[in-house]
Amino acid sequence: MNNKKINKFEIGIWITIISITVLLICIYSFTGKSGECVQVKIDGIVTAEYSLKGSGTYPIIGSGENILVIDDGKAYIKEADCPDKLCVKQGKIQRVGQSLICLPNKVVVEVVDKNPDSESGVDAIAK
Image (cartoon, rainbow, N blue to C red; front, top):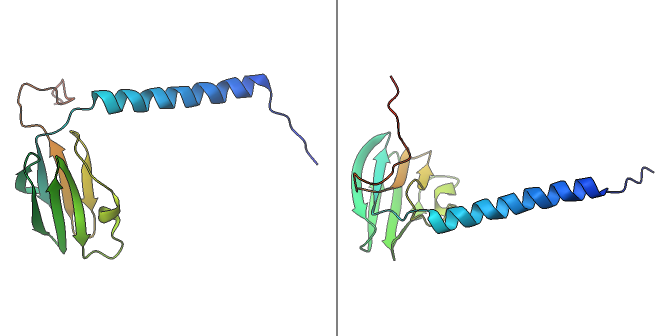
């Protein structure tokens, strides 16, 4: 048998990795900006925009059908006719940049901020 003990150096590395991970999760959860609306893209083309401030249920017809629900400032896909239903299992989104994706139906729902003065994360133009 190969009995290998964990030394202090390895314990220190694991504590450091876990601490950094917890710190990054805390920073993201407290600094992430809530979006104003969601954009619905079908096959890469924006087909609809819905405000996160309201409530409603919206059918999305792509290669199949998805049911988008907006409630309490959050959006989620309630139903889908795709075979794996991964889009339904993705949960609720509310922060800028989060998205719900249904590959079989070619649907992407993304939270966006409509304020042009806000930081979008892009600060340069590539040529």
